[in-house]
Image 1 (cartoon, one colour):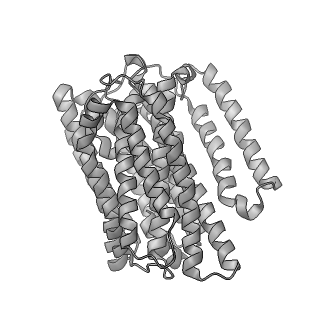
Image 2 (spheres, one colour; image 1 turned 45 degrees about the horizontal axis):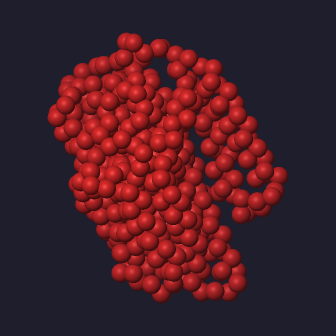
Length: 461
């Protein structure tokens, strides 16, 4: 999506700062919905809810493609966040209940491979379509693909549900998660303009705090909570979940930054197609490192591999802190690959660790916590780096610096934030190293290429 923002901004007259909500809104809604979507599938039928997610996805694509202004794009992306979370949650559940043993590993591996290919092809296809048919073309194609999946699902996928699960669904928790995130993200996005000590920003944080307290109270009282609070006493789960949040936040924040920087006329001035091609080394690095993860974990253990991954990502971020306005594309390749490979080393082991020390009955709940953290990380870091990038860039521009130098300063400041986050992730290996190595199935690593989007609850059903 980030690769399309400059074209959407030019076509709709909406600023890039505002369109940033098309990214954060998607992740915000996804974080609130993903666990509830899985619960709805367990109760009412996973295939039925999966098809509902496809229908919602089609509707969101049509809304975005027909939008003449930024508001329609942002609203459509928020709806798409709910749709995507539903498809992911119920899709993995359908795989888990319809396969077992080696067949399950193969199915999950194919899911992970398809997600990785989609991640690699997305920026490139988006660039091709912007140049050829306009940015709307990508959403029409997405809608057509989702529509084609409907008869395939009806014909080839059997309905399943969990008859032993309580029919109680924590809708209040879903609303409160959104109420926690929305004002916090608004404050992060607008704080520089409003003033960090302004009544508006402090009010947003007060709302977040109040919603957070209400969320804890509700989760302690409902029959089937969105987040099982007793699991938050598990240090390994918490450490792994924070690692997942940080890795998702860093990679999403980076892709947002470089997609805009590469296309800016004052810097590299790449076309959307060229910018899509420029991001491929990062995605290819993520894919190539995936088969190496299981062997590395077996030799070194989960904690050291996570630490090594964050160390590589930190190195890539630090290199980008020194960006200058006259850098050409070649200077970005090594940092991008380092970050992608490093976070690829983090994703699989952290996903495995998040479910490694809980009982079999709690694996699904632990996986839900990790999935939610992935979305939260993507939303929070995108909002934060967008604010730092815009604020520093505007400050340097006001001081009389050339446009390219001001933009480079903004990117440098945002990458410093990412470097700090990645460096903090290295400390988590002290917690994660206590995770047992083989409690999670090998399919978790087969899906590591898709781990930036979803934690695989292989043992949850």
